[in-house]
Image 1 (cartoon, rainbow, N blue to C red):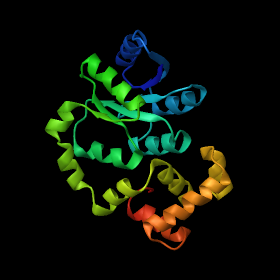
Image 2 (tube, helix red, strand yellow):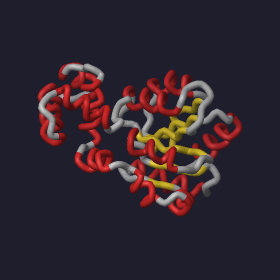
Image 3 (cartoon, helix red, strand yellow):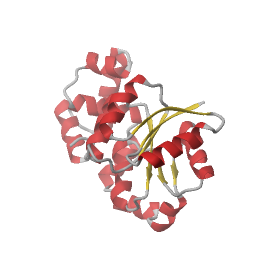
Image 4 (cartoon, rainbow, N blue to C red):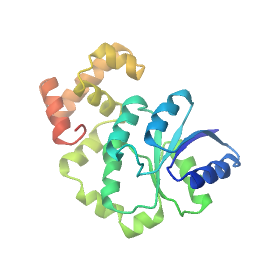
Length: 214
């Protein structure tokens, strides 16, 4: 069962999509929201695997919302559901661990395929995005340092790095990510080794330079 939470500020579209997906075998609608604020209020009370997220909501900016989602729900998978095209939005995929980018006018079968691929740990981008924007061209716009981060750090290491930059100690990080303190200590040592820095200050400087944090 794939548990899906949908957020979109167009209520008619939101209700229609929730009704349509809720009728599909193997999919359960865990909740819906019409704003970023409502999403942050309702999501903690649900069991959600995948968040279908509209890019432009009226009350919270895109990046602010993504930061809050990733801080509070680091394990949730996110698929952008949007009419927007362009590398400005695709760049966010590398910064906030987004698993999919789907155009709202895509066929139902493509959306169902995307949900299954993302649930299984993969990614999915609408073919129009691949053709019109070109993922290869997009990759060329990412700096060498950004590619280095994407290639050498695991998702969990990036989560730990972000919390280190927020001045969480090892015990606090362990509690937030449901890890043991020793595991967090290992992640911290691995980060210092992989990134070639000497201490926590070096980790913070690296994160700022590579836009892992603002």
